[in-house]
Length: 44
Image (tube, rainbow, N blue to C red; front, side):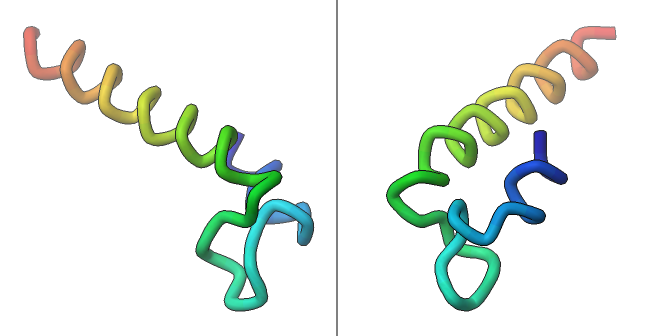
């Protein structure tokens, strides 16, 4: 998911990190997935 986000120029602003309007949903989904993995890993 992150490789798709960083490789597609339409998903980031000119600096290559901040999400554009088109990249905001992907950035949000990546952030939520990372939080879920951290919470699941913490339980073990």
